[in-house]
Image (tube, rainbow, N blue to C red; front, top):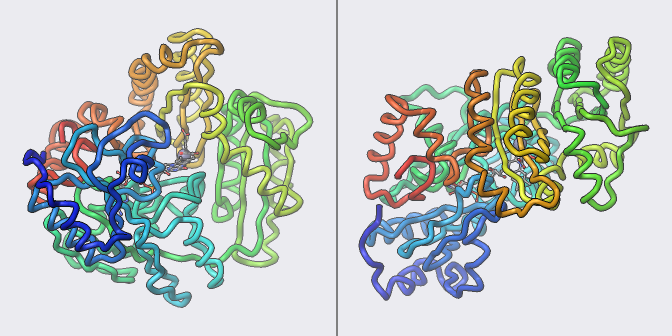
Amino acid sequence: MPDLPPPPALPDAFREILGPQGLLTAPEDIAPALSDWRGLYRGEAMALLRPASTEEVAACVRLCAAHRIAIIPQGGNTSMVGGATPEARPGQVVLSLARMNRVREIDPLDMTMTVEAGLVLARAQQIAAEHGCLFPLSLGAEGSAMIGGLLSTNAGGNTTVRYGNARELMLGLEVVLPDGSVIHGLRRLRKDNTGYALRHLFVGAEGTLGVITAAVLRLFPAPRETATALCALPDEDAALALFRRFRAADEGAVRAFEYISGAGMDALLATIEGAVLPLAAPARHYALVDLTASREGAGLAALMEGVLEAAMEAGEVLDAAIAGSEAQRAAIWRLREEQPEAQKRAGASVKNDVSVPVSRVPEMIRRCSAALTALIPGSRPVPFGHLGDGNIHMNLLQPEGMEPAAFLARSEEIMHAVNDIVRELGGSFSAEHGVGRLKTGMLAEWRGGAELAAMRAIKAALDPLGIMNPGKLLPGG
Ligand code: FAD
Ligand code: 2HG
Ligand code: ZN
């Protein structure tokens, strides 16, 4: 943990490295970087560093190491666990990667794209598409989240069921270590067994081991055919049964399989302007199915209709709306992607980004919902998310009329009630959002013993001064 007071001339030293454009110190300029998307945390920083090159990042890190200044790497600042927010104490800088947003190279033959850490995900998708390729990572925050942040949290999202997490989409990394030295690992090799796979250490490290400055990403063939449907379902078991049907019919076609609770959909329709349910009547459970193929004439429309018909006959699907155009597809996706925003608007809520084996999802949703409404009568469970990965956001909305602060004061109890059930089902307390600042206590509880000791040993070896993102991921770290 840094303990020396920062020398007064430090901003000048940073300015010398970064130039006037690369350093912000005025409180109003820094303010947005000091709080998180959920509004859970507010911190302090003496400066917001905005380097434009790997060399500038390395020089800043060396300066910070020399003066024991803590560094909080920041991408799009969309962390759900306070990972990119500094602590409320002096002697820290936020290091934004936003100006490092170039595509260094794209190769449609190797199917790779070498990009800087500050490239926004939506832009990466767009550039890949312009080259006839697909960069498949996709999530609600894709208009803000950046490649460095996505890799540092090993982000999941809607397409993990088909393409894997961010980790699986990365072949090589460039990283500035906490002493300012640089790992030049931008290799675009499918096979490379040359010692410890260091690149994977930094994926999911949440900025505690170094600063990712660039990455080699895997590309895929662009989709040529799509089929998307929103289905009304009788219960949670039907959601799992429907997923199995699609997997059995053509596993390779399932790009996303998302669950949405009826209560979550109701909250969305009440709070998001222009959102319309494309079904005859509201239901208590929904599934969004998205199929894609890179081959023209893949017959996805027939596949979709055939599977839904069989599921309806079996009583697993009550009603379904199949998108007949790109606009309808986008409108259906909006009903899923605006869930976080709708829950934010509906009052105070507590999030539980949990995972269980896919087969246990229905039981998990049922048991957690019952436990939560017993704990806080009148509260509204609004589970939704990536059923195909066993990752459900088991969120809870405050009871109508309750004081938000009184509800949030019970956050720990709520998270524990969910975690106890998830643990029994062999799951995880954080499926895709990471540990950040919110869940360090849970990490100690769930990953103690040899696992936590190994993590601490890695941290001590790479960041002996403890300057990289203190207070995040590791308990007391
Ligand atoms: P930040 O929030 O800026 O940082 C996240 C962490 O990474 C911090 O610990 C930070 O210190 C570290 N970091 C950032 N950049 C670097 C770098 N270059 N080098 C080292 N460390 C770095 N997440 C999912 O997984 N799936 C979802 O479906 C999903 N949907 C979301 C929807 C909404 C509306 C929102 C607000 C968030 C969602 N998230 C989701 C969470 C969030 O978008 C992801 O965690 C994302 O990966 C964060 O990217 P970012 O660039 O905003 O990183
Ligand atoms: C999503 O899947 C994100 O939309 C956010 O992971 C989840 O708001 C949440 O709890
Ligand atoms: Zn999610």
